Image: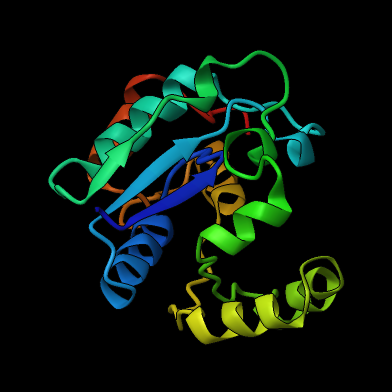
Length: 179
């Protein structure tokens, strides 16, 4: 049976930080594949407009070309309304956390321990200990989609922040020019 990782996000736009993290997790946790699942309308990002889902999906496809272990899934893109991970993956969350491994990582300004402090009361101490055990030490690259959108809006280069095919797609389609 294939060991599969699921990497969800708005990917607005997908950037090298996403790819580095996905590859690190795949390698360190022995995953056969990583599925990138762009969300059409994450509920926690309802305060700002997102680039159309079709553009974000295409950018993910372009970004992962050449890595046979990475695949793009449009599953959430086909849903109407806000996209909840709960609906895609976390349906009956208490059961799911017993069936799958949650692989966590620190991000610049956010630690796994902070999240576990909040979630430990919901899923229990044994679950939190398992997440701590599986935590991947990823490079803390200060690359964000917000920063990339801002740079594009200011007419600055995003070369090496996004894969070259994604950079060209953004420029060819005039994405984020008014960010």
